[in-house]
Amino acid sequence: MELDIVDLSRLQFAMTAMYHFLFVPLTLGLAVLVAIMETVYVMTDRPIWRQMTKFWGMLFGINFAIGVATGITMEFQFGMNWSYFSHYVGDIFGAPLALEGLMAFFLEATFVGLFFFGWDKLSKVGHLTVTWLVAIGSNFSALWILIANGWMQNPVGAEFNPDTMRMEMTSFFDVMFNEVAQAKFVHTVSAGYVTASVFVLGVSAWYLLKGRHIELARRSITVAASFGLASALSVVILGDESGYSATHSQRMKLAAIEGMWESEPAPASFTLVGLPDQDARETKYAVHIPYVMGLIGTRSLTTDIAGIDELVAEAETRIRSGIIAYDALMTIREQRDATSAEVRGTFEAHSGDLGYAFLLKRYVEDPRDASEAQILQASNDTVPTVWPLFWAFRIMVALGFSFIAVMAYFFWRSSFRGQDYPRWALWGAVLIIPTPWIAAELGWFVAEFGRQPWTVDGVLPTALSVSHLSVADLLLTLAGFMIFYTVLFVVEMGLMLKYIRKGPFEDVEETEVWTARHEHRLRTHDGNVPFAETPAE
Image (cartoon, rainbow, N blue to C red; front, side):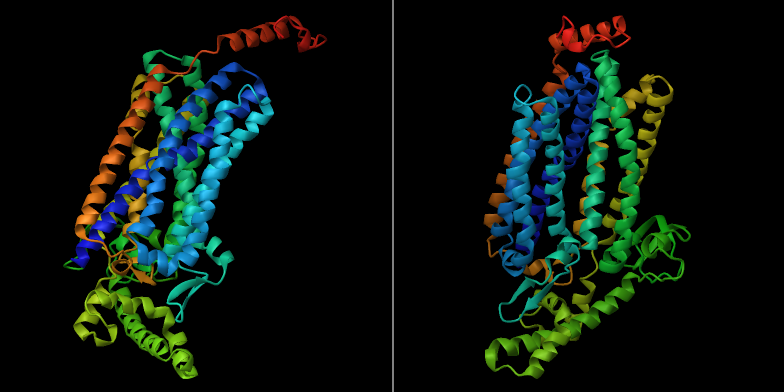
């Protein structure tokens, strides 16, 4: 029954988190693209760029609103479904979540309102400043949530207090500049930029195919292709950095992604494809690319990479060390202030492995009573299911390289072929609109599923993190969330498709003003007559 509760809690959080992340990357990328478009408008004073800013800004606003609604439910789940997790690590996890809330609801949401309602109340430069603050606020909001998630992947800057039975922060600086968190942030943000670029590219291509809003579509494709190409290249480069950080902080995840059962001597090869067999503990029909994994994982050709079997043996050693820490912890809890320095010293020496002893609680109430078979089973539990990680990672990488090819092609056509696009290319741009979301969801699956069996890697097992709820409670709330999110999905898709079909509104008056200005420039090319004296002004 306890395992059913854990599995249902994981399913519920996975469903809500992955649904929420459908909105996050588009929000991150569209905010920046809209700011770029408005920057061009302020520099050139051409109304077409104002139309573009307003149109893509409207789609950003719809996505932002639904994204906020889906994100709120995730915050509640920490208290509802994961109460022991919240109690155990709340001192560390709560700080970046609070800052994320400040960024999202006080900074970002405020400037979003000014963006939509300040067009006629702010100066051009003032409104542009607001637009860039929306983009910056969106990205800072992502920064704090990824710092929190990065700490779960690599728990630095904190230590366990045996007197309070909680993890406590020792260095906010270490938490904030955690190498995993920083790598995840830049990689995730770049993926969001690619998502928005593919979205803008695909919608603009659809307009060209339909012969509608030609000028807006051509300029939007140029911006999306340029921005998207730089972002797609960044995703690959920064993803490489994530692989390098995993070598230090999450070696089991890296080995599982590679289907690497035995340790690889330097320089390790990269497994291009294969069929991981967890029962046989081998990857069948594997095709290897020499040296690549060594370069990605270690930045060298002389460092070995540990395989799953070696890491399982290491986990067994840490479980035994954790049992010693657990025994000392129980003594401290019993004796309180009378605890001897020797016992506390023993605990301090083995406290880093206490979380591994907690893995045994799945099989026995007191880890000190665990049998050899249970210790061996717990050490094998540190291996996540390999084949989903193996294939999810490779599909994600393949999609990442395909985005580079698509953006490079449209950048070339925009820059050197007079914005002339074949119909097959335009249809291709429309058809690939869903693919960056697929890649983003696969990336989160690899990050979160690959951390199992831990909620906080090496510190708190997932099985111990859940609230004391009944299966009926979880099934009821899971059904409620599914209904609620389905309604939101229908609303989101309906609104987005409605405004895409409708297209940008035509700002005729401002277009005429710009035309008059442009004609006056041609008549007064010597520059002697100021624009303030033109009839259009």
